Length: 130
Image (cartoon, rainbow, N blue to C red; front, side):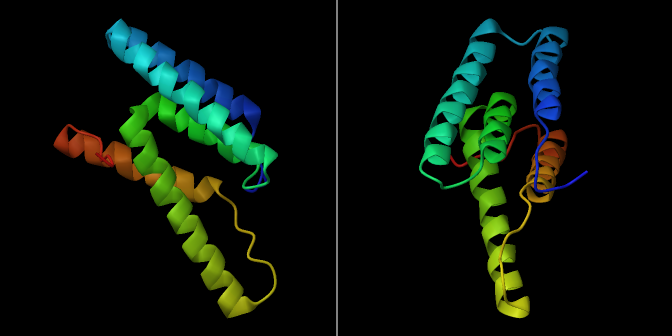
């Protein structure tokens, strides 16, 4: 699997997995709607960024799934921290090795999502911007 390509099948599975999880845990409908709205908003903003060449469609879709799972404030935390790590390691790679600073987003996204879930399991709350 190439890490610079985020498979759409994986993202669909994560999106459907959220609704299955919400159904099994009896998540209130209002919370599900707020998370769905956050995911749809992130997807729309992400594709606008893709049209302007800021990042690729895989990052937009992955961010939308993160907003779906974590809600608005958790999604912002996910996006800013994972994008910050990506930028830091991209600049470090460019400085140390020269050439292109292209770095895959998926490993950083998985690392931040794992940290967020670990934090929620131990404290009962997701880390968030607000």
